[in-house]
Structures are given as C-alpha cells and as structure tokens.
Image 1 (tube, one colour):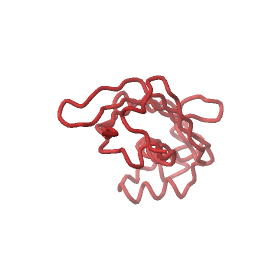
Image 2 (cartoon, helix red, strand yellow):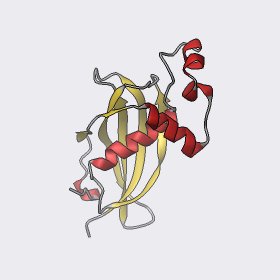
Image 3 (cartoon, helix red, strand yellow):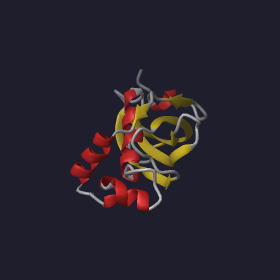
Image 4 (tube, helix red, strand yellow):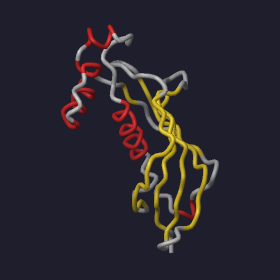
Length: 147
C-alpha cells in the first residue's frame, strides 16, 4: 500500500508491529552516533542516576519510530522528503527488554506551495504495551500527489 496526498484522511490512525529494545540496539546506536555517554554504556552509572539499567538514547527512539513507521509501507511510492519533527518529547526512558510500538494519526494536510505535492502532518507516539508513551512527537512530510 502506498498513500498519496489524496489518500490521506485526517484522523486516520495506524499501529506498527512492536520491537524489543536490546543491549545491541543501544550499543549500535552508540557506535553509529559516537554518543557513548555512560547512561548508555555503564549499567552501574545508569543505576546510580536512578534508572533500571542502561537507557536507550532518546534519538534512538525517535529513529526507531521512523523505522517502525517505514515498515508499514505507507509511502513506498509517494514519499518525497521528511520536513522535520516538531514537539518531540522524551516522556519515559527505555531500557533493555522494553517492548515498544508506534501509533500514529494524520492530523493535518495541505497542498505544497512550491510543487505539485502535499504536506502531511502526523502525531506519532512510541508506546509501551500498556500504551503509556516513551516518546511523543509531530512529524511533517512531503508526499506525491497521484496526478
């Protein structure tokens, strides 16, 4: 399925598959970003800071949100660009073993002012199984029109 601008219905919601955060996920993100802060690498340090163990980077969670959404294949043929993330809030830390999934809702759409495309806005949540949020954000994208 590929949604084009005309197909987007404000209020429509989608839910992704879940993902369990692993120590390897956190280590890989440390390596890729060069952010090796002890909160993400040293369990004793993280526990002393009040966490249940090493925590995942907030930006890892944001990237995971986009990856889980991509697995829905909503924009396989229609995506042009991400225009940015707004109102990002890291609500609750994620530790090794936490299971999360994404729920998203289309909240706005408008025609592009500069090209034959549309701008869509999604409210996106990275949620634990009890539906409490790890991260909440708004994502704005540019997608193709059908014609």
